[in-house]
Image 1: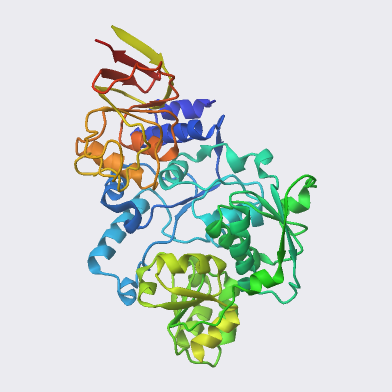
Image 2: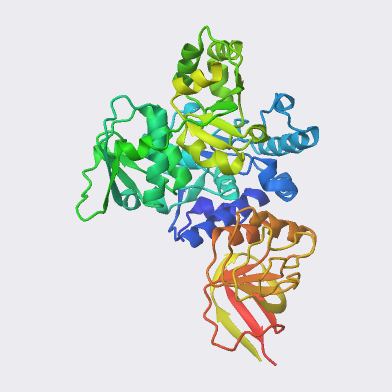
Length: 387
Length: 135
């Protein structure tokens, strides 16, 4: 692997033991994945924020590190909201450990934002190289923004944050970003909501696996793209997809699709995923809500009273910037939580049926919450929550 | 006699110990007891054996990425391998070796029959060299 002078100096320990170690880690990962060099990054999103995941040993390791992030960096969602964990029924012991993990990251200069939507907090641009971890964020950055990131593991993303570089392989290279399979959607998508696009992603992820799909026949908006990509990253391992005439790289490049397998998808296959089962709770915000989604929820809830537990999840920064809307939502009886989500928090485990507007949640809720998941549009979800 | 082999350095440093060969991949999360370094995965060829202080040879890592932290834990309580030799390094083991200061190399073509459990081996993770003592 080619290292420049700055890298060599860090490797020689000139910037301290922690950065030396972190550069060793980046070089080793570069060797593992066949990178020829490191590439400077604009931001990092670090997984391994949940105490439940990294445990006591991970916490001990974090506490040995001594350096500050040199690029803006945030964390993945954790198992509880930082300031309202008791409302979520999280134990005092767990919360103390979780806060210790967060404090360790704070000491390393990582912003205390635990979210799968870092792109709402800081402008991420076309062509930016990133080291992000969470699968839906990686998909959004690559596909919707046209930035470049592989799906990083926790220590690799942390190393990238502390050094400001990541190994240049995989999706950092233009040659690896070309479509590998066409998904031809034959459906009337005019009235499609984020739930329909999430359901499409749920279905398509299973069909395309880890390939880069190129969609035709759909024209999703930003939040719908988010739902589509998140679901495909959950049921498949899709870190990048293109939508003809919609996503930036599909607009800029004339991809030669000749000879690539085409998978047809019909509207009826997507409709099939919508069913009518009884649910006990409703959860929105997987991935975390955009400001527009929060606004829409507030609008649809206006003047109604929530009768089933209704959870809404969003990034702390998005909640703070839209506090009045959030207050309106909570006034109706819903709870809006930051830092965590329906998939990683233990709070949803008490329900046997949960309604969601997300294809990703449809994929994860059964295993991770032990509940039946029902998908519906945001409006249908709120109808069920208030009926 | 000492036989020298050259591979690719993954994690820096030098470590020596008796060789322990696992023909099967190893999952450190749930497959290895983080307190004792004993392999606890059911049906694993090395089930019940301790990897502490050995030069551990196995094809590659498998299982959860949290396995990296188990290697770190072992290095803290003195039950880590002295060094690791993989056929092909992957991210979980490479990460664990680096954060646990365990020298590691990969991509070495050992002639058949060279590697035997218990022979003394020294691994140099900087140069990628492995020295095997033969009796």
